[in-house]
Amino acid sequence: MERKNILVTGGMGYIGSHTVIKLVEYGYNPIIIDNLANSSEKVLPRLEKITGTKIAFYKGDVCNREDVDKVLSENKIDAVIHFAGLKAVGESVQKPVEYYRNNLDSTLTLLEEMPKYGVKNIIFSSSATVYGTPTHVPLVESDPIGQATNPYGQTKIIQEGIFQDYCHVHPDFNVALLRYFNPIGAHASGLIGEAPNGIPNNLMPYVTQVAVGKRDHLSIFGDDYNTPDGTCIRDYIHVVDLAEGHVLTLKKLFENPGLVIYNLGTGKGTSVLELVHAYEKATGVKIPYVIAPRRAGDVEANYAATDKAEREIGFKAKYTVEDSCRDSNHWQQMNPNGYED
Ligand code: NAD
Ligand code: UFG
Image (cartoon, rainbow, N blue to C red; front, side):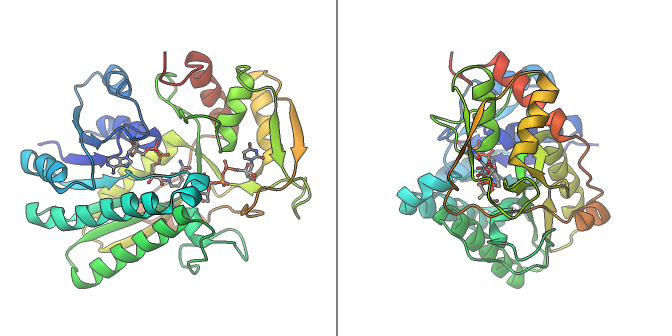
């Protein structure tokens, strides 16, 4: 049978690159478009090494019609997985116009270009941030959309709305909104992983940089939350599990379901202190930390209800937080400066 072509926007980034590998493993043909705004061209040869396959890559901007037109006209695309976007919460507060322009324009451009080529299936990278400040956990897909505390979160809420409105008038179009919880970990090869620019904002890359001695200690933002150990609780999901969730979702889209929404998480909450201890246990590396003031905008606890994704697409996270810590550490030890030499 002919392999299906999957256009992966943002496929050179952290989650996209891991998904490209899963696509190859499951017999799909991934085609990447990425403008390298937040990724390195060194990802491509590493993906080819891991998969043993040549991977098609278009350097292009998903906000640019000609760039999208080129890849859609040169390939018969069966589905799009739309990872491309800017994602740094703090930066989005400083550069709101850039965030709205890039994130909304890329989605609008795809929705204008895809119909010209008869492409009717798309998976969109949404986020647990759309739930706002939870009034309860676990978070269920039918829970109301919350209030975003930053422009990044607002772009995810607006993009979900754009897809809903589009599907309303195009019943033959299929969209999966995947709400990711906190992706961590890396491919077991240690060849690809998360490589933030500058000082990491997120917990795991900060911890791995402490582990390799690039930073002397972690600051834990608050230990006076109403949680068992006082630190915030999140649902940390291994990026390889997350990648698998996309491939399972593709199968669902090809059944023509219209619009579907799934949480992708483990269903298990882990506190910041528990994550630090899991890291130490999994790697044998000590992570010095200090307790610092709370970080503005942090929610106390969130984790996913996973029943719907399990029931409808057969998704269940396989890796533990310790597995993720081991793999993140391995990636960082092998690449102390990320993709830079
Ligand atoms: P990433 O920055 O590593 O990857 C995004 C990729 O998109 C990068 O390679 C970047 O160069 C590319 N890109 C950005 N704008 C583009 C454009 N206009 N045209 C072409 N390429 C463009 O981020 P990631 O962690 O892999 O996240 C992927 C998606 O998942 C994003 O939409 C993000 O908002 C979403 N998400 C991420 C997280 C997380 O914690 N990592 C959580 C929830 C949702
Ligand atoms: N934390 C620290 N020290 C650090 C970094 C983080 O204590 O140096 C804590 C945070 O306070 C939080 C937890 O670790 O309690 C997780 O923080 P992250 O920044 O790793 O993750 P968030 O859950 O805050 O943010 C993530 C994504 C956002 C998304 C948000 C909501 O990074 O893109 O989830 O879904 F908007």
